[in-house]
Length: 133
Figure 1 (cartoon, rainbow, N blue to C red):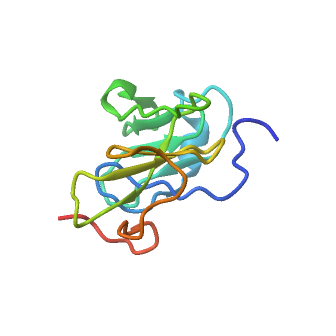
Figure 2 (figure 1 turned 45 degrees about the horizontal axis):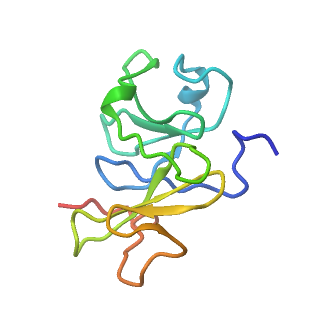
């Protein structure tokens, strides 16, 4: 399986709004991505945050070109170096973030480091469409 193809469906969250991102065709044509690959975009109106497996998070400008890579979070997998995606947050602990690797499924939190599975306290907002206040 090529490195740019996930073995399962990804559910990245927008790092700004903490809502599930959706596959977006505009990213296939983005100049930030060298080869055609599946990309995800935030579902909130006017939000230009995107994610792709080879590049991680980036901002898609109004013309459909990717830029501002330096402004987006750059969390890399400690196992394989792939750009990780925000998978879960915790409303009770506003600073908590769980990052997942799209390649090896490694998990990294800003509290615990590399983990095998998320704690029961973590609320997966990916399917709920909630926005953290």
